Length: 85
Image 1 (cartoon, helix red, strand yellow):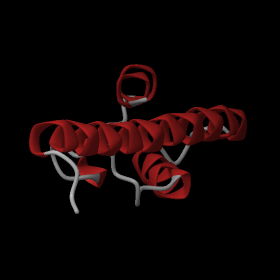
Image 2: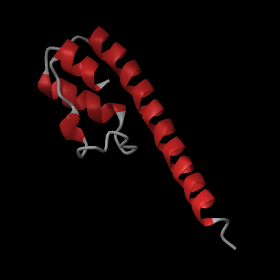
Image 3: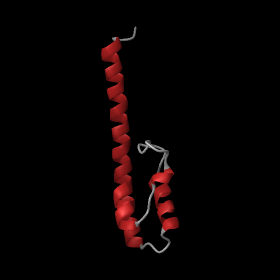
């Protein structure tokens, strides 16, 4: 999503989240679209529809990856330390 917005629309959304924190669950499609409209007020409504779908899908994937990472860390810690009693 970041590279598509940067390359196709010349919009850098990295400032919306802290560095190294792109799996930001609190970020919404509306946040990103608002930022895009501020950067490019002339963007067409058809582009916004496509961007919304892409952004929502990307955020959903990011949320799933974040959960997968959390579960992997828990499993890793369980393997290293054994079950908690």
